Image (cartoon, rainbow, N blue to C red; front, top):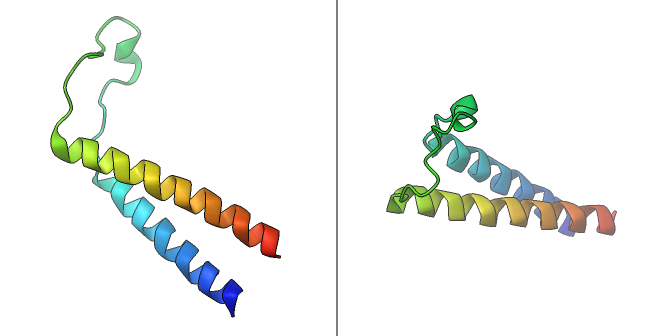
Length: 73
């Protein structure tokens, strides 16, 4: 029963992580950052900061949940 709940939670977190990553705008730098075209000190918009924070939280949650499932098995 507990394992089923953890699997469902893992699926929901992974779907949300995919959606959050797809919503982020592309950096657009690529190899241009090698030649000095990088914008190191560019200020990020509020929505980009929120998406990056959500990505970090969801990715950490997914890793912790995955380790927890392996330990339970």
